[in-house]
Image (cartoon, rainbow, N blue to C red; front, side, top):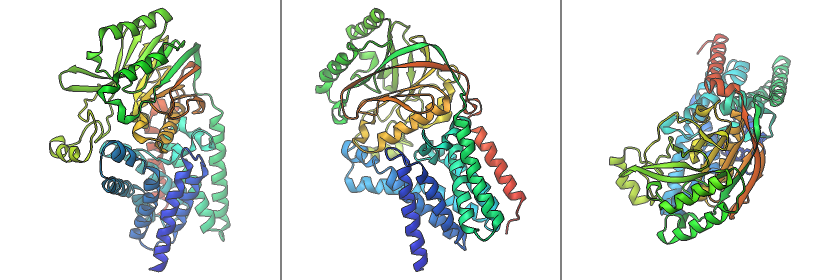
Length: 497
């Protein structure tokens, strides 16, 4: 019993330490080493229920340590009592931790074949469970291990080929190779296989990083990303309207770019209720400067039907994008008739009954580019971002991470946007209310970024890209197919007990 408790403590600490692999810490080996520790713990488990518990505890360390910042939106801005908000985070983490627990149970079936267990079965199961977490109950793919490899790790080379879940599988394979070396050090064949396997994966990833999957098209484009830095507790106050409009006017009229972006819900208007004089001013600015302005606004095309949208004003014809993937309990309430009264008693969130936009909306044709737009949480879903590709030459993310204050949440969100740029082989313009506003290159690198919690006009130059990365071509089907093949091979080389 004492040894089991010690194992549990190590698993919990290992999951917590894996958080340091993600932004803002960016120690990319951490998740790999953490998986190695978890694999060593699993290798000493005599029963599947023990592997499940260790995997679950590892997940509790990862998720409680990595998404605790949700408390800011629930307590500080949503009005939920502090203890209740922490209780909700604990329960949410407990649910998410079931996924690594399942990996432990299923991989234990291969315990008599260490090589197939650690190099094939466990990486495939890890990737499949992360993919499942990306759609289960509308999906929460946050802290998928592949994100920690963007952009500096050699394993980031797998991202434009197999997406973030493919990169997670590569992390798990390297970790599995290390487990094989440490648990089979007396067997030369296993040690050699583990060492060579880890080296080959890293070298292959490094080689893939040198491949240019896409290429520039057209002339460089001057852009301005406007960060208004409106505190979340002021955004929806009627007395703040004048201040917000004035602040964005000052930023806009000091912009010289051909493409100018304002963040999610930047202006305090419903689009259909925006003063005609202000609409005309935006249009006139665009015509006079040969520019297009993309603005985050709520819209209400039909009474009581609200959308989170982006509208274009200026030189090009007016166009719009309406958010498709909504945040549960933030932008809509699942089983609303049953849960809405309870949620409204606990949380104060404006416009929590929004409508979904039509899927497969085309990119916006502005400033001589095709811009694939997504709003806030949508950039967590690479399979959805690729819907605008390969037609889109640029990607643009409009978000408002003021809900998470000065926590690490916005930095993690930025890293996910970097991964989307890497998957797509496209520059990504990320404009936010309070940060992190950034220009992101085709390799996921930060070209320029605005300081957080400051009013800032981030100017820069980007070039549109065309072409198709393997991930854009086959999406998640690529890694899912490889995971299926890996599991079939593992089953072929062993028999179930």
